[in-house]
Length: 195
Image (cartoon, rainbow, N blue to C red; front, top):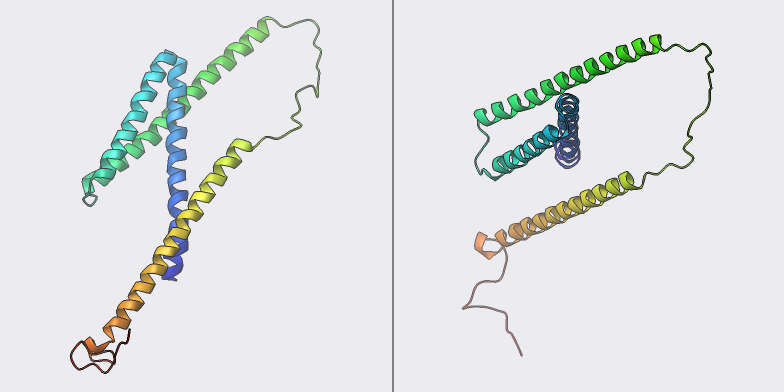
């Protein structure tokens, strides 16, 4: 069971967990940026996006280059940052919902004021997609799969070589030096080389 966990479960769960964390961060930050764009314009959003992405990139680079164990302070800092991102996403979603409700109320009031005498309804008119294009996403997943399987085969090869070297070490340990059968070193050798 330990081998299954180490060789299958953990290598599968680490990328899936990373993708989930990335999705949560991206979705929550996008909510904040969309709400900010409604209120202050695109230039502010661009500046904030550059600052946030730089902060994330340099922050993770800093933590990745630290050669020491993770301290409680570092873990607490990352936890607080994650909670702040999630809370900011909720605030952004509420701001977007509030803005949509306001626009909907204005549209309803405008529609009430400009009610026509005759209303014609049309149904089943629209654009129908006849061809589904999934090239970019499919290509991305194929690249991810190829990289994963190359990494996995390299890990298998490293494990195979490690087992081979351990077997050689056990074989050498069982030789004359450890009291087992083997060729005696020098002097009184019964083997003769002819050349």
